[in-house]
Length: 539
Image (cartoon, rainbow, N blue to C red; front, side, top):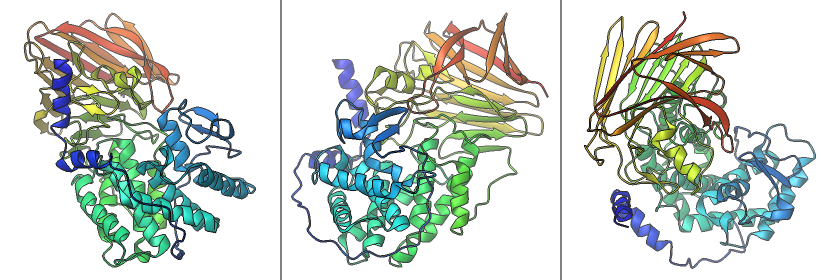
């Protein structure tokens, strides 16, 4: 009980007063009723990124690698996970690729079905986040098809009013940003201007959050490549509203944040367009880098990527990236996320990923689910990442679905670079709460044909496990502590260590609902602990 109380204290002490106040406010009923009329609709020129096919008949829907039938289970069946129900209420399927010609009437029917089955302000569908995405998707669909009926426009207007009455100030972060985006879409669609409370509220949120959420090095502050890519799409969508909104709208700032953000994303994704798995990140959710770049070009926004620098230290977001013709190395040498909002953070301090000759080799384990399950907790834990675990504990106290108690603080970052070698290192104190107060320092040394990883952990007889996870496509063979890595097309690399190694079977989760077999190199020991691992590739 005491341990739980301490963990709770270290979780809530970082919250902003606004978050606490609004958590209380959310228990107060809203005194708002459905309107019987809506403002006139304005036409807008708009381009957007299509979604993958999610349904063929608008009754059977596939989200998160699960398919369920709407006519059987309904819109809010508690037997389905909340995340699956959220996806249903998003209405992303209105934007799916290669839609058939006869789908228009089915789309109208499912919209009317939602209106009929989801009473004003009741149920999962009316929670702020799915409401926001649904507002955006209905408007995008109408701009393409002119398909919203009077009843649908009235429902849309009431959804906007409901959302605007209580945005997610208790969460902040990407949820609040998407709330503001939805309100601004509605302002452009319904012709609202500076005289509208909804516009003034949305503009205030957007102006504040552009500076708060987009760091100087380009990263979205929740430090998830997936949510970052979604934020890039948000910026492109928001930019296109400028001609329908007042002059106070910050279109130039939106362009600046997009260009900086695309440079960051270009370093955090691989040649095959997969995302690096730091914090909550899964492939197949956000648009690809090319889709974002193409949409930007189509609306007149070009990007200029940093193609000259082999090594970049993103100091604000805390990632170090080395990329040349042979390797792509990404290391986490920063904090878990914003102190008041680490919900998408993993205990991945000083973890890294490595691709060699375009093949992903070393990975973190990824994210396949949200919620409160033991598997969700494991995937957030240090044990699921390519770094060091001490005494079977995580470097940051991840718990519940989206909570973090005591968290690792990364410091003492050192970087040395010349023509022959690159070295960078960092230290974290996430295990100082344990007996012996162990500390972990990791150094990466990048040579012409190898990467060496040096680890030191202080302490007194603490159990240490160093893990390096391999991508599922990598074939692994252990010959007397010399690990051979290959693919079906040939040899890629070898790993040697000054410690005894074992290779164990594990799992990898590159998408929601995905569970793939892979392997993990494990080196065990006790503190004081030191290790040297060399990854060499054939030129």
